[in-house]
Length: 456
Ligand SMILES: Nc1nc2c(ncn2[C@@H]2O[C@H](COP(=O)(O)OP(=O)(O)OP(=O)(O)O)[C@@H](O)[C@H]2O)c(=O)[nH]1
Ligand SMILES: [Mg+2]
Image 1 (cartoon, rainbow, N blue to C red):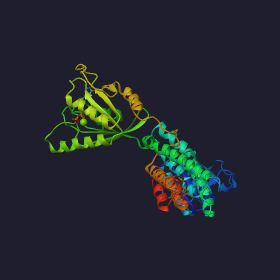
Image 2 (cartoon, helix red, strand yellow; image 1 turned 45 degrees about the vertical axis):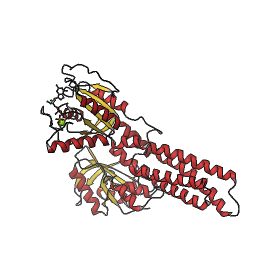
Image 3 (cartoon, rainbow, N blue to C red; image 1 turned 90 degrees about the vertical axis):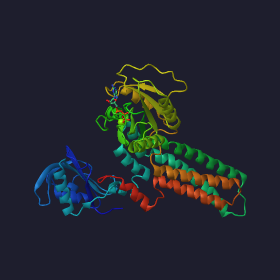
Image 4 (cartoon, rainbow, N blue to C red; image 1 turned 90 degrees about the horizontal axis):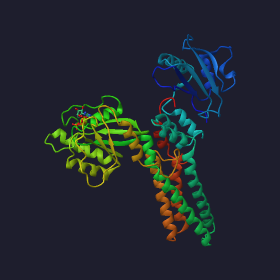
């Protein structure tokens, strides 16, 4: 399928060494060739595809604005599956804008968000899970997120889903055979194979769903609440972790009122840090709201850092807080202000979470916190990177497929008519198809590609 000719800057709006403009659609090489004059005098499309051609770039009025490299690929052997061309210019936003303008004068129009990848999907170059991986790869902030997205882009998740899909298609085939000969009962052998296939798919989908926790941790990061009594050094810790003075720090207890959020990578894990108001009984209206927000942040956290001041005696409430945190999420006790003389190790009864001693002020011991974070979070479960579910859309579809499958199995066990079982299996297939995009509504794909950047 050859769409309208589109063009966009693929390298963002910031000034940088090289800026790339890409074109896709019928006539891409001709259009690029209209603004680009190869140094050997031949037209761009006369050069062999997928080679770099050196030459001059001109604006709408034919004035030279840059010396660039150009390349083109004929359909269908390109990212989008259409004829494409690319101009590698110098990365001045002004040069790129003039060049783009020049392309518009020769018949191209501005590409929308994700339009290149959307065309790749529509032309069967990528399935939907792979297309989503493209955006995940661009957004990846940690090595783990990179590996997951790259694996998904190579088709690892899709293959895992397709295996279940194929098994269910087999089940459908069996059933259709039965329906075609309604006078014969399902022979026990067939019923047994079908049951086994349904059970196998059930197990595979359950394992797949279990990967979502780890997958979403990799891509979206882990919400991490920093809690503790006033003045323990929570905001100082947040600042030390993000590397700048994000939150206000003073020696006045009750400095932080509202929650303060910032991202950081610690122990190869992307954390969405939430600094909170110090927990204490208070009459101050604003601070009370802050304390309520602290508790809410703790309840939603995937990791809790309880910060206590090691230079002061531990209070009963401190230990109660540690216990409360441990009941909610993996917890690390941060024994802060290690640069000051310790108040003495308290006699603690009961279980303590892992403890990290550090000084948020000097930064000593922060690396140990990173190591502990990596240890405290759930290890990869049920799948290697690349074949984990990473977004809510995928998890929801997989969950729906599993539910339908369970209805089918129950119907089979209850001896319901084959066509009723078939309806449920069909529903499971259709839900699975949404993962890879075999069966997905137009508005859903539109929403997915809206997440993309222009030029991708
Ligand atoms: N010596 C020393 N002082 C620290 C350390 N961390 C924080 N402080 C000091 O402790 C005081 C309180 O620090 P904050 O980071 O504002 O404490 P907080 O836990 O955010 O306090 P609230 O927002 O009031 O709940 C400030 O004077 C900090 O400079 C540390 O590691 N060593
Ligand atoms: Mg604070």
